[in-house]
Image (cartoon, rainbow, N blue to C red; front, side, top):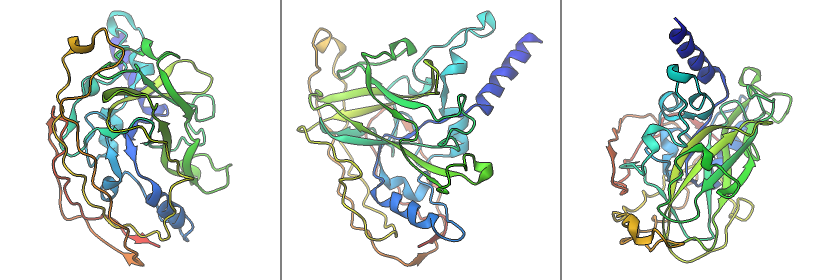
Length: 342
């Protein structure tokens, strides 16, 4: 009986508490943010959701083992990692599990059409995660959205495996959960979806150090509630560092897009397979050697096409399969699934 009550209690904690996860590890929101803003002014507003399959091409790099396209219900049930609940020590009935990553993310495994991110040292990658109704603190213990942080061991092929490694030394960057968020209506007293809050896009602009060594760098995205030193939710991802150092470019510096109408961009070029260096090769070194074969850079996006009204319907279903290769197959072409009004 006690065991049944314990399982039910943990399930309830996971269900009712605020939760979120990293949906994209390198998101280009230059266009879609303007579409979201423009459509929010319609009467009634038209929701533009970055998680919809027709916008998957805007994600240039994915978290570990993330499906493309994803399914919000499946992700929120099977993909999230509830550190708060899993690390609770309930004795023999519930031994504490302090892993930093969920089981499916404890190795650098990627879906065929959802490759890891790649970037140059000193560049910026934009992480995207769902507000899930919490962008203004609704259903979050403490009443405010809290903070998100990224942890990193500082060198290639180094894994963070336990939450005890979420230390100040390993912290690469922190920001408010809603520091870079688009939510409406503008009235800040509207704080929950039941009141009409729409918060489909939260981002964190992660600035990569200029001295990062070439190779695969494992990172962990972590959400912490306000007034709490304990991590609550995490997602694990990798960034393949290659090329020369560059200066980060933020949203404010990015070129403006004149129209709100999207056009599907070209699929990223397939990259070469990556073979991890032998562990002994740099066990004592501060930095790892470059990978034997570096992935090719993604192909440039096509210019957007201005459209006044467009109604499209999904007619194809694309299945994905899990593979341990970090090579994206040709990205499937998906037809858009819902009306857009501009």
